[in-house]
Length: 419
Ligand SMILES: *Cc1c(COP(=O)(O)O)cnc(C)c1O
Image (tube, rainbow, N blue to C red; front, side, top):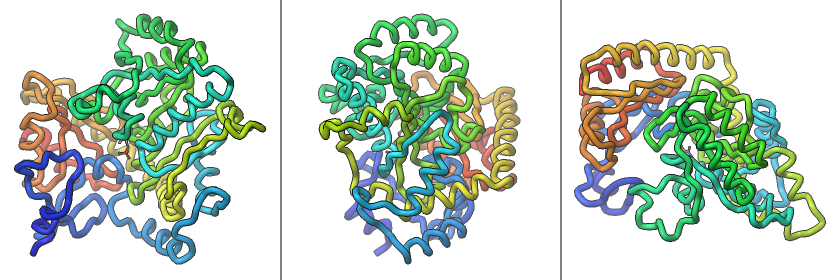
């Protein structure tokens, strides 16, 4: 029996309607920006395998580091024990993170990194006897993960419909525009005395449809949050590690977060790992004689040595001159393609780019994830030798940094008409 038919007997895939499910494609190998299936077809991975891959698949440098580490230490409990990869990664992250961070808390994916951030912020106030400060402010259209806390601070959507009554209440703000910014600041101020934290995806709302908004206006909002002592949580799970053209999207703003969440590109897309970093002010609220002020949170695979090793190897590659110029090239090529898309007669609108991300809407009326556009475009892209997976009517690309210029041009030609 083939892998695909065996899969259909035993696997339940994420975000996938089970009835009349299209056959999954069995991938047998990855190399650079290419994926190879069992029938010998190859696909350019134009969305970095759900935004995680930075340096291409099966990168030999990361693989070698992993192999060496696996022979030394593959996993160890992280309460009462520590190890070099975790410490080294924390030191290196603290040196480059955008803000005045002092501590790294490890977990194992993006959702846990935001859960940790929320709990850290809420207990920060609880530890100081300000238990009323337990509300969260978030943006409409936001996405912070699929676990309950992360779902609660994400916009209510068709994906979360079954759970709405169980999700905690959140103050949702529109993303800022020139027109609404003063109203947003007012709302934030009104809720301040009961608010623990404000969580946001800086500059790009990923799963919400690559919705981009202005750094100056976000800075204004962060300023209001800071003036009102609201903890600012930057969810850089998607935007981190060069995606927006800077190492972190928070570098675009003058006001820096108090907590930052990382995952996805953290390990170059090789292993599951989450990081929640906080400032010393937050950390100090947990340093106390009272044992009840401990942060009682952890995961079995907290700071897994292999995952930390992959992250260190990915940082080595990211900090190379060659990788930085690859990122710059993608940014520049995206701008050129965006200009052509705007000039084209295609039924599209809102062409936008930020760094290595390029997105536009298919102008077909209502934005709706469950419609057919996404499926049709995904299929045509596969036939054209690339993997693109629109979010409803939002078509976007987010390639690995190692992508070759010819591969990038092939993707652009597809976007400019082949669908
Ligand atoms: C993907 C994503 C998450 C969730 O990460 P998982 O590893 O999929 O749990 C959280 N926040 C943002 C901004 C994301 O893009």
